[in-house]
Image (cartoon, rainbow, N blue to C red):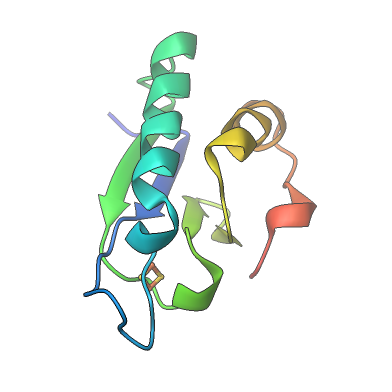
Length: 102
Ligand code: FES
Protein backbone atom coordinates (compact mmCIF):
# COMPACT_ATOMS: atom_id res chain seq x y z
CA UNK A 1 0.00 0.00 0.00
CA UNK A 2 1.43 3.35 -1.05
CA UNK A 3 0.20 6.48 0.77
CA UNK A 4 -0.63 9.70 -1.03
CA UNK A 5 1.56 11.60 1.44
CA UNK A 6 4.28 10.56 3.84
CA UNK A 7 4.97 12.93 6.72
CA UNK A 8 8.29 12.67 8.54
CA UNK A 9 8.54 14.36 11.94
CA UNK A 10 11.99 14.76 13.49
CA UNK A 11 11.94 13.22 16.96
CA UNK A 12 15.64 13.58 17.64
CA UNK A 13 16.78 14.22 21.19
CA UNK A 14 20.14 15.62 22.30
CA UNK A 15 21.45 16.12 25.83
CA UNK A 16 20.41 19.29 27.62
CA UNK A 17 22.75 22.19 26.72
CA UNK A 18 23.96 20.63 23.44
CA UNK A 19 24.96 23.46 21.05
CA UNK A 20 22.75 22.18 18.23
CA UNK A 21 19.67 21.73 20.41
CA UNK A 22 17.10 19.25 19.15
CA UNK A 23 13.55 18.97 17.92
CA UNK A 24 12.56 17.05 21.06
CA UNK A 25 13.67 19.96 23.22
CA UNK A 26 11.23 22.28 21.41
CA UNK A 27 8.17 20.05 21.48
CA UNK A 28 8.56 17.48 18.69
CA UNK A 29 6.75 14.82 20.67
CA UNK A 30 3.63 16.99 20.97
CA UNK A 31 3.82 17.79 17.25
CA UNK A 32 4.15 14.11 16.38
CA UNK A 33 1.20 13.23 18.62
CA UNK A 34 -0.88 15.99 17.03
CA UNK A 35 -0.25 14.48 13.57
CA UNK A 36 -1.35 11.08 14.83
CA UNK A 37 -4.40 12.51 16.57
CA UNK A 38 -5.48 14.30 13.40
CA UNK A 39 -4.84 11.17 11.34
CA UNK A 40 -7.04 9.17 13.70
CA UNK A 41 -9.76 11.81 13.75
CA UNK A 42 -9.92 11.91 9.96
CA UNK A 43 -9.37 8.17 9.44
CA UNK A 44 -6.82 8.86 6.71
CA UNK A 45 -4.56 5.90 7.51
CA UNK A 46 -4.34 4.76 3.90
CA UNK A 47 -3.70 8.21 2.42
CA UNK A 48 -1.21 9.59 4.95
CA UNK A 49 1.66 7.88 6.76
CA UNK A 50 3.36 9.63 9.69
CA UNK A 51 6.85 8.52 10.71
CA UNK A 52 9.14 9.80 13.45
CA UNK A 53 12.78 10.22 12.42
CA UNK A 54 16.18 11.13 13.78
CA UNK A 55 17.84 14.45 12.91
CA UNK A 56 17.09 15.74 9.41
CA UNK A 57 19.44 18.73 9.54
CA UNK A 58 17.83 22.12 10.32
CA UNK A 59 17.84 21.63 14.12
CA UNK A 60 17.58 25.37 14.80
CA UNK A 61 14.21 25.42 13.03
CA UNK A 62 12.61 22.49 14.84
CA UNK A 63 10.33 20.76 15.19
CA UNK A 64 11.15 19.89 11.58
CA UNK A 65 8.59 18.17 9.36
CA UNK A 66 9.10 16.94 5.79
CA UNK A 67 6.23 15.95 3.50
CA UNK A 68 6.66 13.68 0.47
CA UNK A 69 6.17 13.29 -2.44
CA UNK A 70 6.47 17.10 -2.62
CA UNK A 71 9.71 17.17 -0.60
CA UNK A 72 8.48 20.22 1.30
CA UNK A 73 10.16 21.12 4.57
CA UNK A 74 8.25 22.85 7.35
CA UNK A 75 9.91 24.37 10.41
CA UNK A 76 8.84 25.23 13.96
CA UNK A 77 5.75 23.10 13.52
CA UNK A 78 3.62 23.29 16.64
CA UNK A 79 0.62 21.10 17.48
CA UNK A 80 -1.61 24.06 16.60
CA UNK A 81 -0.27 24.04 13.01
CA UNK A 82 -1.17 20.44 12.29
CA UNK A 83 -4.84 20.95 11.39
CA UNK A 84 -3.80 23.58 8.84
CA UNK A 85 -1.20 21.23 7.32
CA UNK A 86 -3.90 18.58 6.94
CA UNK A 87 -6.53 20.97 5.57
CA UNK A 88 -4.31 22.88 3.16
CA UNK A 89 -1.59 20.45 2.16
CA UNK A 90 -2.54 16.84 2.82
CA UNK A 91 -6.17 17.27 1.77
CA UNK A 92 -6.17 20.45 -0.31
CA UNK A 93 -2.85 19.98 -2.14
CA UNK A 94 -1.64 23.52 -1.30
CA UNK A 95 1.58 24.23 0.61
CA UNK A 96 1.49 26.03 3.96
CA UNK A 97 3.81 28.84 2.89
CA UNK A 98 4.17 30.47 6.33
CA UNK A 99 5.83 27.31 7.73
CA UNK A 100 7.98 26.45 4.71
CA UNK A 101 11.75 26.43 5.29
CA UNK A 102 12.81 24.55 2.10
S1 FES B 1 17.21 17.55 15.71
FE1 FES B 1 15.50 17.74 14.39
S2 FES B 1 16.36 18.48 12.55
FE2 FES B 1 18.06 18.11 13.83
